[in-house]
Amino acid sequence: MSEQQTREELTKYARKSVAKGLVVGPGGNISARFEDTMYLPPSGFALEDIEPEQWVPVDIPTGNILDSTYRPSSEVLMHLFCYRVNPIMKAIVHTHPAYCIALTLVDNELPMLFPDQLVGDVAFVPYVVPTTDKLANLVAEKADRYSSILLNNHGLVTTGKNLREAYYRTEVMEESAKIYLIAKSVGQPRRLTEEEYKEIQGLESEAYRVNLLQQMK
Image (cartoon, rainbow, N blue to C red; front, side, top):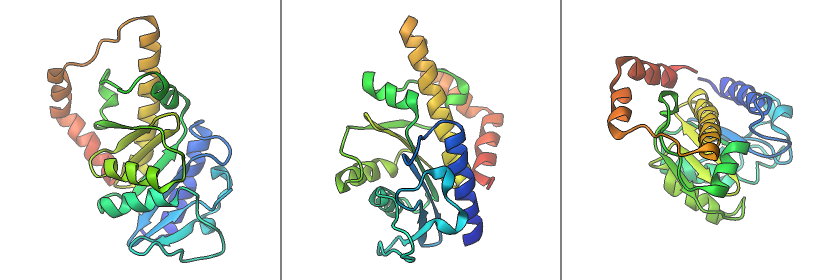
């Protein structure tokens, strides 16, 4: 994938995030990595308004802004620190999905409930003032081991080997939180057992789906 394709992919998934109601107004931010550069939203822009040429390039090793036309998103440190701790990571999607936020207000877990929920283990990060280096460090500590991170009273961070994978995890996390909260409001949700969870992971079709998702751009 080229730099231009990276910019176009960011524009595509930024607009999908808005269309799906995962962010509102200037909230949320997504990024992608091309070689040693990450591309971030310009500060103050709503995600649906960003054009491919407006994504702000930042050098990952040094943190230097490579084009001063626009200021990068105020969450630049969170993205920067995550890419530094996990070189396999190529994309980060940070959104404010309603059900994910609601879940963090009432619980500190998201159990496995159905097959399509299998997006990997989920981490929770306690509430910290957004845009701070403290939040960036807390998220980066989790990003080396988890691909889905719930930020208490704030939102969701998902990562992936490409934008498609990171975005897919966002949609699945929001649907999972929605199903869990609905079920919990009327009774005790039945969780998948560890044996059932491992059976799904062992399916040839599941391995194929995961592999295909990681390869698709």
